[in-house]
Amino acid sequence: MALDVVGLLYAGVVAAGGIFGYYKAGSIPSLGAGLLFGGALAYGAVEVSRDPSNFTVQLVTSSILGGLMGYRFYNTHKIMPAGVICLLSLAMVIRIGLKATILPTPKQN
Image (cartoon, rainbow, N blue to C red; front, side, top):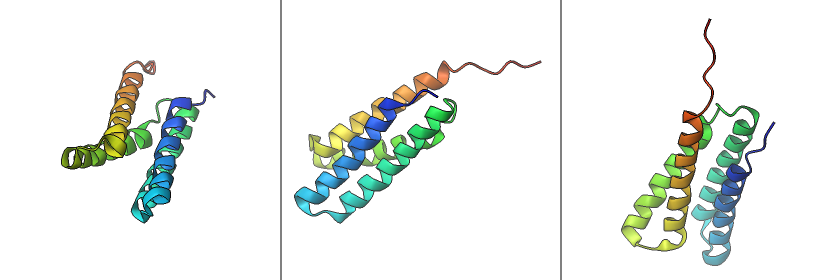
């Protein structure tokens, strides 16, 4: 089982961002969203580690987070945290898409 280190690091960054948002601004929504999305991304990374073709959780979570943070960046024009998380999410979606296209297809008899 090859561990999805990139996926776990991304999940850690998202969770740490939520914790930092709570620490710096006392934002409970940041804490909740960071832990929720970070946990879902970590679960998705574990699933991808078990079976590389099981990327649905990671793809959906990254897409939702990227869309939300992209919308927030569009409205506020603030690089931190919205712009950075949007770019990281986009990079993850591209990574998952590339890995999905090169997965070996099962042989049919």
